[in-house]
Image (cartoon, rainbow, N blue to C red):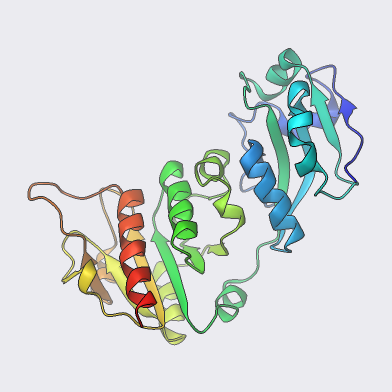
Length: 274
């Protein structure tokens, strides 16, 4: 049974302080708390909580006229999660801009150690690795691609942005909450951990040696992508095998989100044939 909604009548109400001016002070990175925005992401948060993926909701804030539309989702949360509702002018005053979606939740994540995540992977697994991903739209798109092509996990090195940033989470359509991931550590250390667990590691670069369609499949594979512009560090490219996506001459590279989608499709398709 969902909690009985409480009405918020002032933007200064302390019960909604965590939602105040969220553009200027996003909660990402602060004690593993984050802002979930929109109906789809709220649904994914409820599912992640129920599935025991390490995510939970601390409180929910809704535009009053959105309450009925998300009532079934609210039923999935424990009844000790407070639900607050506000009229449009009050909600806009809290968040600091026009919140037309009208659906927000304050979430919390318990991050497991990298070794725990890797040791829990199945014998047959596909992992996506990001190095230096700094654009939140790209980070969110990578998670959406990973979910689409059934990657088993994502590893982001310590130089990547936080995928729980509000925009990244929204762009991922909530996939950050459904795809196991770990963020932190040095890229070479992460890849060494994967190699030690039997993963065939393939870096993706416009100058890659092997056509992505010709990459030999194995039961455990990892696709490694870097940030736009600089791409992957030479230390990574020189140590592991590289693949390329054939493209028109004169074009430097594809957007990392697009390249990730193509790469995961090619590798997952190859794995499905063995």
